[in-house]
Image (cartoon, rainbow, N blue to C red; front, side, top):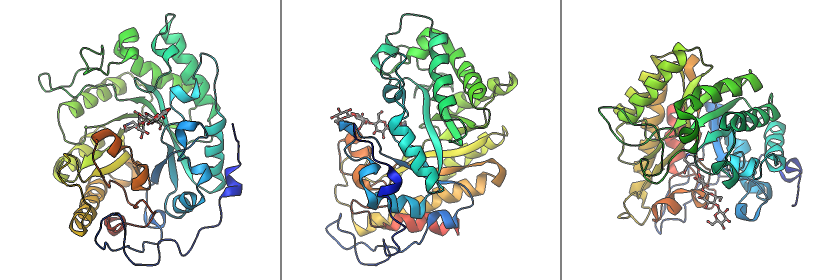
Length: 374
Ligand code: G3I
């Protein structure tokens, strides 16, 4: 494995970057390239981005070898999340074999550049190593070893953790979503954690994370909870239970993999407000906006770029309008360049969900964010 010190690859902020005007090339028609100087300079809360990282073959787009991506991150963001390499499959691929090198390099690079780290994710049903999924021993002990070892390793170097990720299904059972359990009950994506430990795995994971790193803020993180529906109701009910039992949870992470037309800004604002009413922090952890969710908008037009700008703007506004300063955990976009987004792989269609195009030029979307931060 190559191990390159990231700090050596990173140059000083490229002042001319994105400041040239002109037009984007993803579309086939001219799209204005804005000249926002720095999102983080405008923001009063963490402004984050997920970054691909790691030297394994599967991460050929890792930030380590892309100084131009490093420059954009340094210029605009004061927080990063590792898109993959802190997940269990990568960090404990074999039982007891903790592979921290790639994540350590990334965290060191971030800290060297005054960027904080939101860490993702300790307990999740997906991207688990096969030994863990098929574990035959005591699951509570196995979970404790993973959570404690990983949280302790990054103690003092990360500001927050997604402790439990995506514990609920997307169904509506009398106004609530059910816990993810067997594959059969969970659309093929069940949770071995729930199957082996029941819903108690959630408070236990928070207690273990807090014991290992009492300085980190601890989040429950999920998607499709920003539409004020049954899944949010379940997350709120779980939060009530955790708070009643004095479980150390600081906030709820709204992933926010949304679309240009779903959900409404009003529903998003109401969802944030319901978490705020519990006294918990609200963190937007994985924001991106699908512009072609159904495959019927296959070219990114100037009109769609403008539509996306206004959509980003109304979402940031909903956040600032509904979350008071002391409960703002920050806003993170799930990637920098459209070329790196997970969305086209997921939907099977072209898409342009992020703030920068595939040439790392600014899109009108970034102006939508900047307008609301100002
Ligand atoms: O390791 C294989 C490699 O061998 C293979 O050649 C390559 C071919 O596509 O795939 C490689 O693994 C991929 C991995 O990313 C690393 O690139 C997986 O197939 C792919 O499924 C995986 O996708 C990640 C996904 O989580 C997995 O669920 C995305 O990059 C990542 O953006 C996404 O992030 C999640 C958050 O963690 C949680 N919330 C939802 C969000 C979006 O799904």
